[in-house]
Image (tube, rainbow, N blue to C red; front, side, top):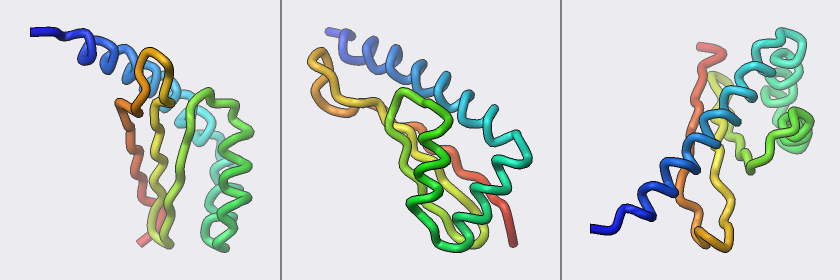
Length: 97
């Protein structure tokens, strides 16, 4: 039984967890969180993406939002060692009724 792919997935997921922690740290800033919420609730997807990029994360982050919540989808990028995206971390949070 070859566990190399699984071992690489575990390493990659640890990166996602660290990046997710950085995202949450930044979102804990009330002013920044307010900017994200306002832009999202006005349907300004490009502004939300720009705010997320301003955090300086090193992995791709997708966002989906509704009037009641937001989802951040962190995905490991494909590399030569691992050509397909192996792992995804979804952070789903509620911000309204």
